[in-house]
Image (cartoon, rainbow, N blue to C red):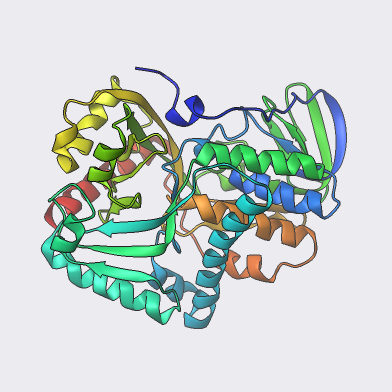
Length: 421
């Protein structure tokens, strides 16, 4: 089995950045060349700002280049938690921002001619019959928010669209979908570079000053700037002490089968939608352009990648599609998602000139792009929408020796809950 991901194997990487050498100055220093940082860099460079992006590894190395490629709606928390924090009117504004995030993706793909295999349609499938009432409530909530194009599918209707009998119905969204996440990220980087941004790869920010005159120091240089945008997400680590503990890196894994052929792939997912179940520990899957099954899930807080990852993941896939029990798994990979304690993204200021956003909790494909744009708006003098989202309060995760045992115990609780609910 190949070590690298399917995405790495199916992209023509033509976008590169040099390593930072020496001291430079900029209007804005951006930390992280994933969706968040590149989105901000593109917006600012287009507006004429001198932008320098520091990436510890390579463009899209983190979650932006490894994720399930699923373009989701709203926030992972659901709308109820947003209403509890912001009130109904402002929670509706937050939802509208999340919808704008999908439009931002569409517009950028078209404007910059990014070849990333985008497809529309998304099915949320219920493992238990009694959960159909939850789907009905979900659909009603979407209607009240003005988000249309949704269809409730009975078990029989769903089985005409999916090659499995394990589910008991689904909510299908017309305006969510999937794409090749790394190709999109590289296309976003290419657009930022063409707009004038400078991207330095293999240039980890080892030390930051997040005060009024921010700077970032790498092993071989330093960037001094008027503003700083921090978008390291699950891979930020402890380099920004005030942000450590505000998100938790959670590992998720994906496998890609050998090419199945168009007919067999269509027998699994007839209309090429993205699919996920509604468990807390979610399975998510879709077809690839070359007719493979891409199947992800198995969230882990332990930080330890299982050996023989492909075979570790295979039972998740064959529980849904037993007809794939003998297919070859060509690729298996994993990466970290940043979650917050309430599953709502965490954003704010560390000083009047330093902004951050992270913790998209599994729905960062669209949201990270939007939060990056909102931070760029702040630098350009318009902070109203960012400040709305920054009002959400978050409890930090526990630290010290109890951090990992508590989180592993929490994961076990949710596994049991998924099994019995």
